[in-house]
Amino acid sequence: MASSKNHKILTVIQTIGRSFFLPISILPVAGLLLGIGASFSNLSTVQQYGLESIMGAGTVLNHVFMLMSSVGNAVFANLPLLFALAVAMGMAKEEKAVAVLSAALSFIIMHVTIHELLVFSGQVLPDGKLASDVIAGTIGTTLGIQTLEMGIFGGILVGLAVACLHNRFYRIELPVVFSFFGGVRFVPIICTLAAIVLGVICFYVWPPIQRLILASGALVVKTGYYGTFIFGFMERALIPFGLHHVFYMPFWQSGLGGAMNIDGTMYYGAQNIFFAQLASHNTQHFAIEAARFMTGKYAIMMGGLMGAALAMYNTAKTNKRKLVGGLLFSAALTSFLTGITEPIEFTFLFVAPLLYVVHCVFAGLSFVLMHVFQITIGTTFSCGLIDYVLYGVMQGNDKTNWVRLLPIFVIYFVVYYYLFRWVILKWNLPTPGREADDQETKLYTKADYQAKQEKKEAAEQAAQTPAAAAPTEQSVGFERDEQMENIIAGLGGLDNMENPECCATRLRLNVKDSSKIDKALLKKAGALGVVINGNAIQVVYGPVVSVIKPKLQEYMDKKRAAGK
Image (cartoon, rainbow, N blue to C red; front, top):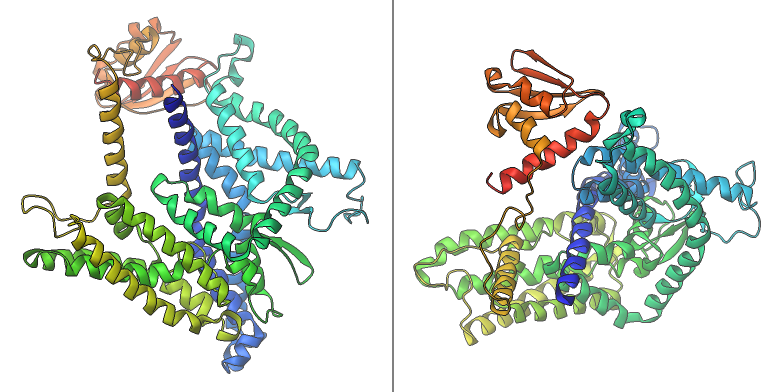
């Protein structure tokens, strides 16, 4: 029972983590625009490379780079909103577009509510200035609204609240008089009211939470190299569970990752601090307090995993080296250039989990080395050559100490090569090219690893559970609904129906064969009328259609899954 409960909690957290990936995946492009734009619109950088004539103030290129910088900065400045939309979409079971719209609306309303309470309490004056007793950095601006500085936590909170309400009410049936507002139309209504309540709660609850976050960030700073090691170790260790985004994003985007005043503005979070310094003309050296949460991955992705790939190649069977070499070279090049490490990491995680633990230890040590040698190279997503050049080399060694990383690359390459080679040969691990001749030679992915874990869990549960009876419709999550069955039959069956949608009063869809339409069955299912125009069908239900449509779509999906 406890195991089942823990599994459900882990599943929810993993879903949240997957939701984070959508806004995170935008960061490389935004970072590229911001990095190039900020670098070459920075007059000191332009002078350093002697490019005043073509990139100096007032030139066309200068305006282009300033535009790139502004576009990239806009993405980072609005990450809380993007997280609200992504979490709502990722957690919504059905009708995800409605959840996204409701999240955008709720995010704005929550912050407007907080703003009005700040004005009412005298913390924000009518002219927009802050009261003298307001602690610097506790109040910021979101979408042009003066509100509490909540960072991505505000977006995540809104996304979770909207997803919860959406999943609870998107199929709600209201009395006939109010039926127009039922179903998916009820979701933004209830979310609007909830956002007001959420804003009031946050006004009172968030300030002490904010102080706790800042205190926790200060504690992390005080732990020094030990704290840096724990961060690096955990960031890698959580990857197999899909929870690493949940772990590191608060350090990158909130006060846990530090706070710094840059050109008169307070910035919170390691990544926000780095990019603010990148855009500033006054930066002499990037802050190690922020970079300590980012730079450590470079030695692993550009050095260590290259050595691991070479070790796997050299220990492969001679007759399989050509095939293995192609697979490993592609994976190693991907890691080196972009910092995407999945094919290599999940391959040795799949065949030798203990080796992955050693890899996590070296990850933690890499972060410590960056901290010790004051190497301050930021990143947007993963630490490959692209980010290394953009945020290290191009910024100059005086700002980043990027040259100091070169010998560490070599050390990590050599250590990983000999360590992996020794372990593979010592325990005869079936790494790619060492499996039986009748087995496929491949690199493993996250999906392979998760399938292996699920198979293991299923086997353990089967061993502990008495033999069960054959699955019934109910056991596979399918229960017959007479109204839905009549609608589907009246429209010619599942295979005859295409893309059901609805307007204010009608279910609209295309069918493959309109001769299969049975109006009598549809009227038995509550239809007020049926309009057939070629293969385009309209089934009139009145306002209640906003409830019928998502219910029908969900029933169709379950029916297909159950093979009915």
